[in-house]
Image 1 (tube, rainbow, N blue to C red):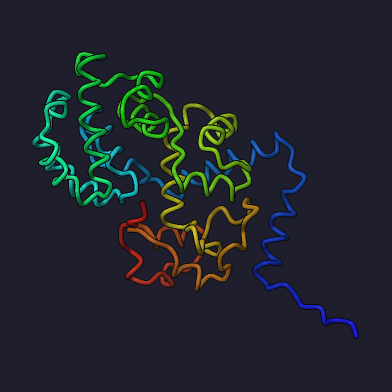
Image 2 (tube, rainbow, N blue to C red; image 1 turned 90 degrees about the vertical axis):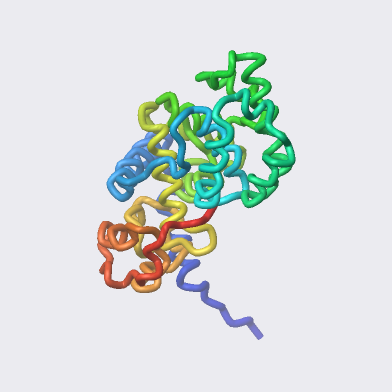
Length: 278
């Protein structure tokens, strides 16, 4: 007796069709599509920006170090106290470890973060006269600052274009079919080849915004996404307008729905809050 044929779920079939559309895409075709998607993201997220509060390069370095495994919202709740007490590199270098740990406790991994900030302050005094340097090579040589943090600092404190590969960015550029890669450094260089250098910093913000508000890790709002026609992963999440609209997040959730051609009224009031995903 032959086994009955079990049809693939509608979502899986749609996802397969979406992927097939771009299966034979040429490198130049991928670059053109990536730049078109980048323009769409610019229109969809005109409010995209660094969501960490800061006024100086040192403050941004500190906030970015604290943001590891912590929401930007929580970091922004803690940093006013930090910035009021620790103003210069010398202040961090001479910080009482126990006192600083207590202040940083709400951000998680507070002992390691305290160690990083104290060592950062010491290194800045020893190597850079207490000032944060403005080059990638100098930044990544400092305690607590890796390539991702360095690019955040360069792009937002020094206006030097940089690509920030965080978890959202990595997930989305793979879903977009821009890369097939998990290594952050390789992703950075691959994406850098797809878009204009002048757009690197803002593209990072827009993709991160899109990841927090639309293209969620577990269930993306495919049916309320302005990138749907350009995305090989369309169908990963619900494609019907009503369930997709309920997945949108953030203060502009209804604007995002309207931009994607979806009735803004389908977005529940509870969704119009600031995303708290790390």
